[in-house]
Length: 95
Image (cartoon, rainbow, N blue to C red; front, side, top):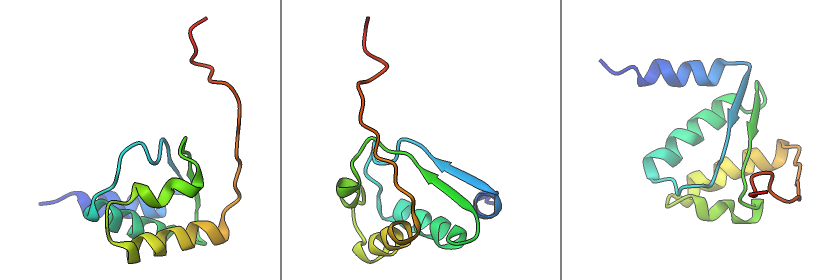
């Protein structure tokens, strides 16, 4: 018996969801559709934070395929988001 449906239900109902390091790896079709479901269910209901080192203009390239789902995800994110573009030197540099 798959625990995946209950996992998605918990993600969609939690008060706050943080997706960190978004864009570090390309998402395949199944991952894009899963993300679309999560964003769709959370949109306008609960807080979602997406953290990425990839500039927003490059997010479309993160999605391997399924441009319709990609457009649906980005459309929901773009029109209701508050963006913070941080520019500073890495704190991970060797000293």
